[in-house]
Image (cartoon, one colour):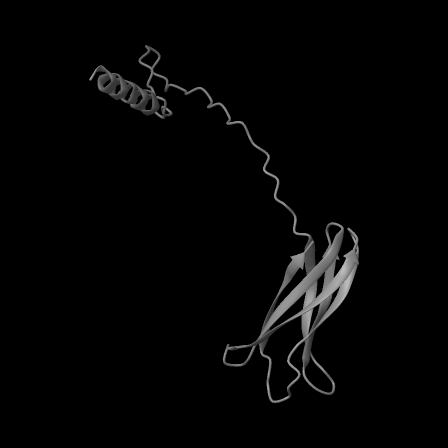
Length: 143
């Protein structure tokens, strides 16, 4: 029975410590004879943690939809490797005039070195009865 009281006491003590350790955001007023407003001391600045954002391995610099001369569509553009990669992929999704997905397409490249640019071409739908109105493009698998 004593163990239950001890455990209960430890939990209560822990809750009190956590509850009392919050920040105190109250202001104080000075009651002096010169009737000037009290000035609060400047708050200490929190330690700034530098957070590094991992850069994507492949950056798509530009792209455009191209109606091919004989049949179908393609998406051409430029991508830049931000690190050495043995494989890089760019995927595109094409949409029709009604906003419905026509299909998804991709192209790939091997052995890109950091800093190299890649002039890519994603071959899209090869059907002249389909009209591509819009597209999305993204870097796919890169390693």
